[in-house]
Image 1 (cartoon, one colour):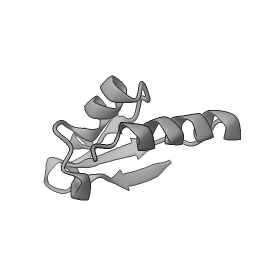
Image 2 (cartoon, rainbow, N blue to C red; image 1 turned 60 degrees about the horizontal axis):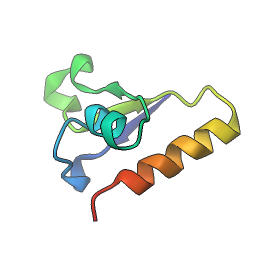
Image 3 (tube, rainbow, N blue to C red; image 1 turned 45 degrees about the vertical axis):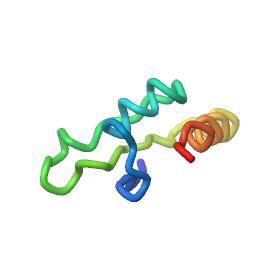
Length: 66
């Protein structure tokens, strides 16, 4: 698992919701893990094949706003 900080990207929605919508990649939202410290964060489970992880990261990068 990785705890990813998306705060600097100023996404228009919670990172997990945004990435599911735009990149079709499902992450766990940070808010349920403690609202004070986790808004703008998401959890990425990378317990999968390298090929799937590469596709997910590529899709996430392509979905980031300019």
